[in-house]
Image (tube, rainbow, N blue to C red; front, side, top):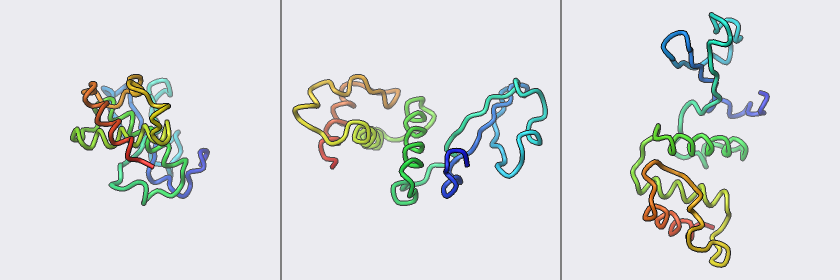
Length: 141
C-alpha cells in the first residue's frame, strides 16, 4: 500500500530471513500484522521486498509502469546473482531489454564500442555476450 501497488501487489511480498533458525526464509502473510508473525526480537530477522513469482509475459500481465520497473529490478538482481538460471540466448535478450530501458534506442553515434562494459547482467558475462546484447539492442525501438 505504501508503494501504491494496490492493484498489483500480488506480485510482491516481504520475504523474511529468520536468523534464529539457521537463516530460514519464508513469506510474510500480508493479511496479518508483523507482531503476530515475528516470534522473537526484531533484530533476529532480515526483511526483503521481493517479487513473489515471475510471470511468463510481464509486459502484458502487469499494467502499471512502476510495478514493471520494480519487477525488472528484481529480475536483473536475480539473473546477476545466479539465483535464476536461463539459457544464454534468453539471457542476452533479457539483458538487451534492460539496456533498452536504461539507455533508450540504440544510437550509432552515442553507443560506441564498449558502451556495455560497465553493465553486469549475468555471472558468465564476457565480450561475446556483450556483443550479442548489443546486436539485440540495435533491433529494439
